[in-house]
Length: 186
Image 1 (cartoon, rainbow, N blue to C red):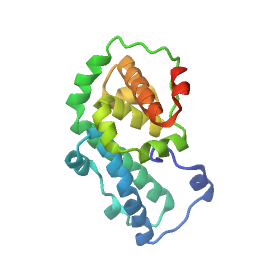
Image 2 (cartoon, rainbow, N blue to C red; image 1 turned 90 degrees about the horizontal axis):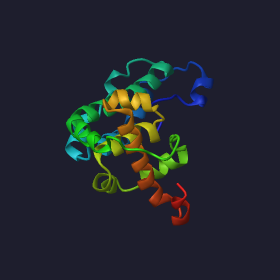
Image 3 (cartoon, rainbow, N blue to C red; image 1 turned 90 degrees about the vertical axis):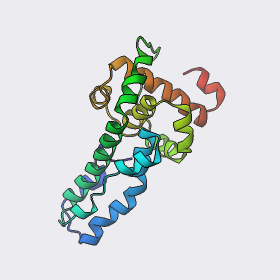
Image 4 (cartoon, rainbow, N blue to C red; image 1 turned 30 degrees about the vertical axis):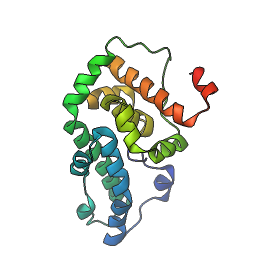
């Protein structure tokens, strides 16, 4: 997952020129990731497909910076479109987290290895076992490193709801990735 931040490697490469085909290729590579992002948020294949933003036709420039920006934009636009498609459900579920207290002082984003492991899990398990808010916060905070303030802004939910949903999502995720004795100490 890389849409919120450009990689350090890209930043160090400096300006490069690409053909139109080279600019369009990243979108073919990103299509599965875009669809996963939308599916994780919406929980519905049809809504996810409608949410995926295809920016490949916009790649008429040979600038590396613009190419990277288009990929980042496509991911952000897909996530926002998916969030808009399920916003009423997010608002309703947020009420379930009213007064939710978490015994943890903070929850860091997932590591790159954890984000890859998350993406390899069955998406159906997400949809069945996590509510829409927990899925959205796990994606935004966990995979993309968004701050809780950004999550609150994008989701239009109270901070305790976002934190509670993320805590629930992390506990769910850790049941798949950590030994049982480690989870008890969480």
